[in-house]
Length: 51
Image 1: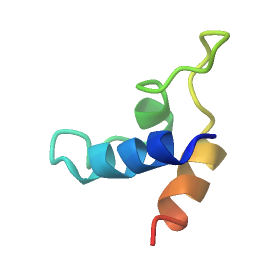
Image 2: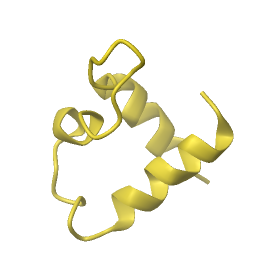
Image 3: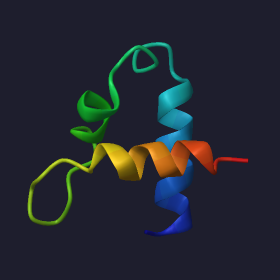
């Protein structure tokens, strides 16, 4: 995944409108090229490594 996309995911998660979403709901905001939502584990890994 591109670094700027990871940065955008971290920034969006800080927005109060998205902070209470589950990782599954949040992943749906970032669909893969085939249209499926980004996996919960991928979202978790990105947010865990945000520092």
